[in-house]
Amino acid sequence: VATETCDWDKPDCMKSTEELESSSGAWIWVTDDKDGYTAARITKGSIGDSSINVQLQSGTKKTIKSSKNEPLWPLKPSSLNHIEDDLVMVDDINVGLMTHNLRERYKRDNIYTWVGANHSVLVSINPFK
Image (cartoon, rainbow, N blue to C red; front, side, top):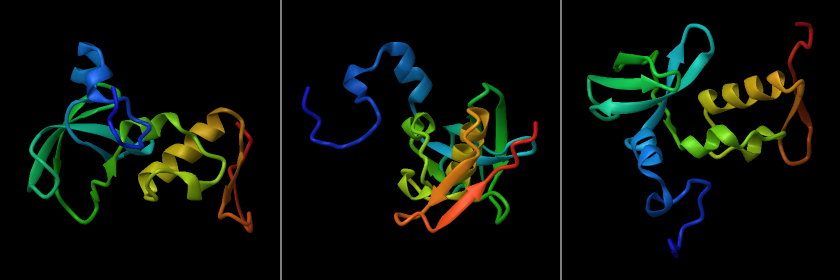
C-alpha cells in the first residue's frame, strides 16, 4: 500500500483493530507530577477547548483545563519509540519530548545526550541511582 508519506507511524490501513483503537485521536503531552510530562490521547474535545478529556499512556483518564501551565504540545505516538542520542534529531522539539528522550536514555544507562549537529552541547544526567 503506497501512502506517499514519510513518517514513523504505521499507516491506518496496515493497523490491527486493537492498534486503531489505541492510537485513534490526537496525542499530546500533559504535565505529570511524577515524570514532568507524559503522553496522553485526547478522548473528548480538542486542543484549544477550555477543557479536554485525555487517557494517559498508563491508561488513567483525566480532564485537563487549558492554561499557561498546561501547554498541550502535539505528539506523534511513534516518537515515543525513537530515542535519539542528539536532541536535535527528535521529531518535535518541545519540553515533553525532550524530557521523555532524556528519561528513556537514563533508564538505559545512557547518561550523556548531545544537543546540536557539531556536538558542542552535552546534557549529562546524574548516574547515581
